[in-house]
Amino acid sequence: MKILVCVDGSEQSQRVIEEASKIAQGYNPDELAIIHVYRSQSSYPGLLTGMGEHAPLQEDIQQLKKLEEKEIEKRKRILQDALKVMEKKNFKARTILEEGHPSETIIKIASEEKFKVIVIGSRGFGSRDFGGLKALLLGSVSNAVAQKTDSNVFIVK
Image 1 (cartoon, rainbow, N blue to C red):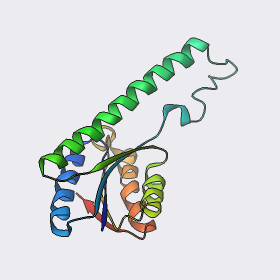
Image 2: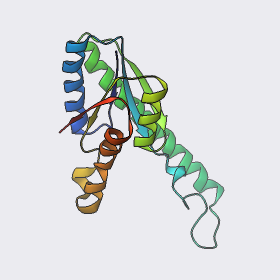
Image 3: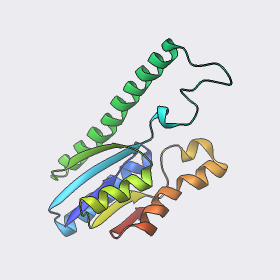
Image 4: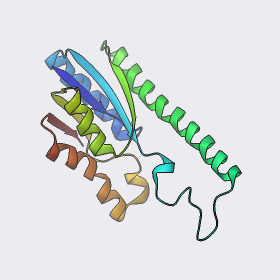
């Protein structure tokens, strides 16, 4: 059996990792993978096209690229931190860093790589920071994964 653990760097991710390790103890998986999916800043409409009729300056584009590189390094650290926790619990795991829509990408990877179990948090990074509608929508990733995958999904509160 293969287990996919979804992390996003939030406090809840720590609980996801803990619960995933308990599940792994019970199932003794053939493979354990930790995934982090992010949306690139340049994937947001209008970010590189400028404001109104003004095109972005080359220096703005370069600055955005530098910011994205820093973000990718931060995301790699999220995966490495999760990996260290699993290793301390004597589980060998691999990491997956993907750019894309979180729920769609998790579903795609789980299907393509035939993961039987997905462990994911009920709320993601930032839900405590924005409140209101934003917090409500952030739970949509786990909901979409649970509804649209053939894998067994464990949602950690």
